[in-house]
Every structure is written in structure tokens, then in C-alpha cells.
Image (cartoon, rainbow, N blue to C red; front, side):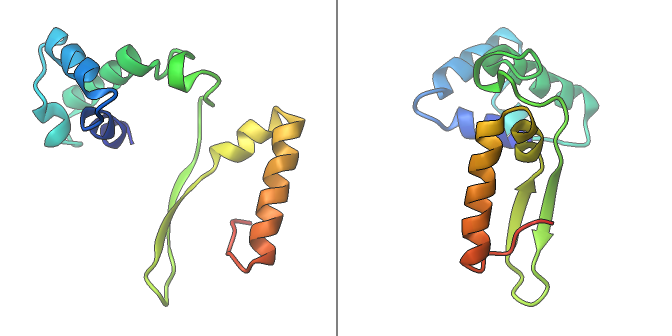
Length: 121
């Protein structure tokens, strides 16, 4: 997820230049993101440090302020259609801390169920 997030930032007109400066300051090339080797633990640490530096990942700041420490990400594949979706468990954990947010999530999920959209249990 870190590699995907950073690749999106790298190609962004808004965030790309800052990310390239941070890559250069860390002595890294764009290849760290454009040809991410997820099996390389040093490269994974470098990407995580880059995301912390540029966007506050793991430091409770910027875009990751109040982000839960743990969240579940599940790839679901519908067996008959082959449709895929990512389900993020963090919205339920976040909702538990905020009654208004939980009520809104319950409303949205309820509307989705009424419309026949499959939802996690």
C-alpha cells in the first residue's frame, strides 16, 4: 500500500515535485517507486521513511493524522463475476471513536444494503 500511495503521489501534479525532492534528499531514484521491489526489505524501509517524511505516515500528522495504528485490508473477489474490490477495515475502527461518524457509516452502509450492494459482515 505504501508503494502504491507513493507512486500516485509521484505522478501527481500537486505532490510529485515535493516527492522527487524528498527522494533526492534521501539519495533515492524514482525507480524506488516506479519499479518497486516489494521483496526488498531495505527498499520497503526506504519507502516507508519517505512516506513518513512527506505525508506523516506513522507520525500522526498531515494526511495520516488520527489514522489508526492497525487496519485490515482485504481483497475480495466475487467468485461468479470475477469483480474485485478492496475492503478497508479501518473505517469501522475509526467509527468506534466517533459516534457521529459511526452513525453516518451505519446510514451509508444501510443505504447500500437497500440498494443490493454486498457489504462485509
